[in-house]
Length: 383
Image (cartoon, rainbow, N blue to C red; front, side, top):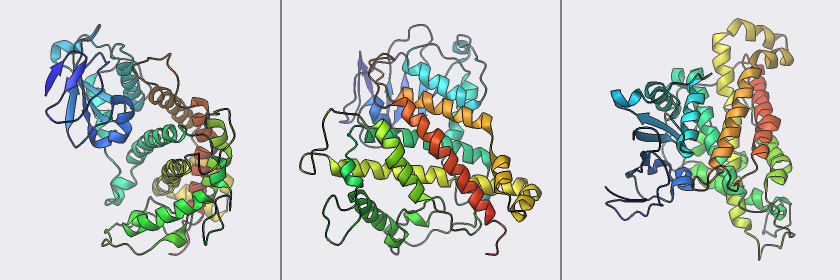
């Protein structure tokens, strides 16, 4: 790789946007759809390094392992220039590093702390090992990663107006279908995805179970992780997303819906499906949380379940301080991901940050707890 002032030239044919940052960043195009929003569109599994001149700190190598969460690697002498910050949690440390890298401030955490955090956050949960899948630390970091996924999908969705026609049954004529255009598109998508084993995974739940077909791939050998249950609240997720989130988040272009010949109905539905499936996965991950908590506090939850005490179960699984941290972290992510780094903090926002936070507060967190309670109420039933 070769460096030029203000732009990076690579040994392949990939086009890279001008570098506008104050420290080197090593970026893998493994998550190009996510990182492309910030660093430009990349091709292929290459790794590229951006380098410009820092203002007030040495020039460390910064490795981006997860969207907008960077790990600086310093020499012994360079570490002396970095001041450790007082942070409440490791993910807060990582977010501080990400935010300050974007806006050219000083690093506020040690390389050792951040490296440990990033290594954990970059690892997807291992569903082939029940003990790892039910480890609360692993679940926690998976939920943090899903915040990134959901936020970026929402940013993609709000490029378009509400386009409410696609949610109305029969508004778009489809032979043999009396439901909405979104439902038809989602049905067809899940039908295809079922053939490639998507819904064989214990953390995936279809919106249309009757759409599923036999996979063309041989089954994966998943261990038993969750107790047998029939909890699936996708209908509630879809309703809350369409009726509550979208009206407050979609931009108003000052015109009415112009119909299928002039509006981007197809693109809108595709973005909606990405959002809905990510939200479903995030919310149904409550089953993993519930099973993990049951295994560590079996006596407590067994009594609550036997007494039919749903409120007691809800109180036992609720951690208000953690919920506040989630909302604060999500707000920071939406603010950071929703800005163009080249325009700084004063540039136009790509998404209504308050709408994203309200979505989590009003239905993502409550529905996750509902999944946990419903799952635990079935936990003692014979399989």
